[in-house]
Length: 173
Image 1 (cartoon, rainbow, N blue to C red):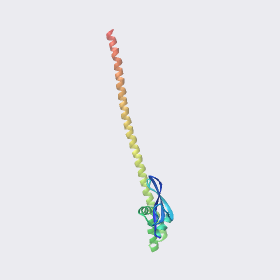
Image 2: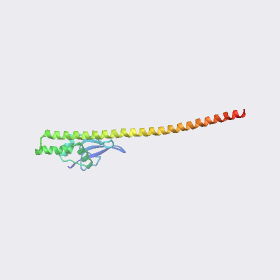
Image 3: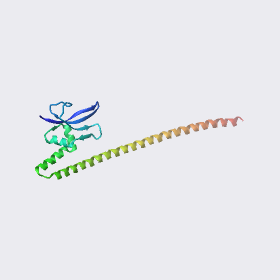
Image 4: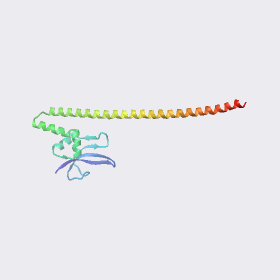
């Protein structure tokens, strides 16, 4: 029996959420599956992946073939790196402790990179909000200036209107 690691669609219309499952290659996309090993939500930024790492590694090592999307997900989560490192342990290139140390170093570097991206996005969002606020202040100042000019013009017109009858009154007397 050929097994596949694939995505099984769930969620509502326009908001797909996927389960990462182990299924027979002949089974339909949303049909019968052997085991659920995780969830994938592409709707968040960045996409959320909840994966049972040990089971995913087991299935990759026993020969389950992932689809392209699942292969990318597993690669990003480090399943293929760990498979590669375990292959080095089996060949005697290094021991299990060195394997785990290399994987942990990779994971920390990845987390550091993701944190830098998150901070960059937060900073960009904050700068955009500040720029928007500054633009809004400028618009409000321009509106206030126009209103002040209108009020000044109205006050001048009213003062002229009051001054005109006052000038006519002494001329008649």
